[in-house]
Amino acid sequence: MIKVLRLASAFVMLGLVTACGTPQATVKKIGANTYLLQVTKGARSPFVLTEVQAVHSESKNSQTTTARTTTENGAKAVLNPKGYDAFGIVVEAPGLAFTPTHFVVRYKKSNEGSPKAFVAKKWADASGN
Image 1 (tube, helix red, strand yellow):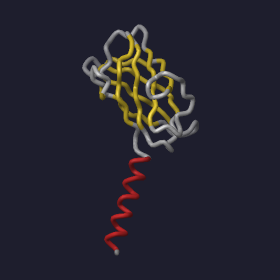
Image 2 (cartoon, one colour):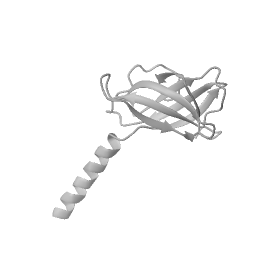
Image 3 (cartoon, rainbow, N blue to C red):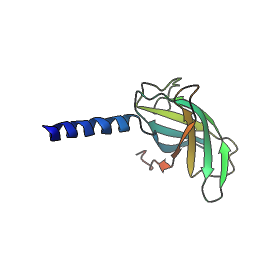
Image 4 (cartoon, one colour):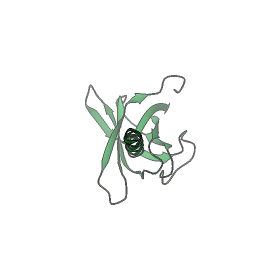
């Protein structure tokens, strides 16, 4: 009986860690200087986008971009992605002098919350996967 309770407790903790973990993202190039970051996170986790930086690892170049939250495919604007387990961030970087290797996404869990960040460096292949 104790083993069953411990196992059940472990699954609950795993679920909490997964639901509250750091968001993950896959990057797709959708235009000359436009990228779609397909983000996954816990649906109950709040997410307030504050900044996205395009970065090139080798040259150490970086540039702040214009970004907005959207549906996962980038088709419609989403003002508050809370309640979404997947959504998009459309990043526009006109005049970017380098090809980014990854993006640093800064966000808060509330308007007054402390800033957090994650790196989007997994690129979708040609088929979009």
